[in-house]
Image (cartoon, rainbow over the protein chains, first blue to last red):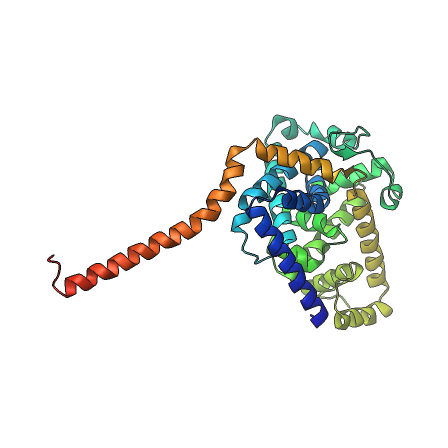
Length: 206
Length: 123
């Protein structure tokens, strides 16, 4: 790691530590700023894991309440971002597990909902839909079907694939969030892609 | 020549990591040597690139959240959860209190042991 990067990290850590101190001492504005900073990424992780806007919003709200409660115990062994995403992912996977036990999911009735999940309705905190270059390149139906295929991957593969879809998360950060070795991140991403390719080859998409 | 499964998997994982820009320079150079004359490997790389692109496109959400409004809602939820409000404060006071108690107990124990040895206290 270069000296410049090391010194940037130290400054970043010092700023984070200062902000954590303020929040523990009851500074609401500091916590509000922390939520504003990390909410978009946290929400995206929850949404990609759960494939449901309402569930994602609820999970992220629960996650930040938990973060507020647990911040006093934060020891700084991982960065704040890693720690926050770990909590969000953990709660998202719990919600997913609880959801899968419902009769609705056991009967596979959620699949219709999943494909219709991208509604244009604006919820309390969701801004209206807009198309990005990524979303424009494939049709809505194909996107829906691909999401279903990703959804059906084993959990240990799905987690890494979802996290890898974020440009701002490197393999190293993914390995810290999931607490698995770097080599495992790489091999799981490859395994997940291979599984998806096999499903496409077997005509499961089109 | 068919590669053993372990080497094939490692090569595949390197291809996949290279697509994500996660391969170090040495491995990337080795990989590009392997790719140069291996059509099958090139096809595999192509397939992995496509699936990586499609997966990322499929997972990209077209919804954005209003972070400010979300933060307001979360703070309101915290205000309505008494345990969340007091938890932080109690936890921050608990640790020094626990340390102080343990310290007192240890000191008292040592003092007691010393007084017994000195015959000031009978068993």
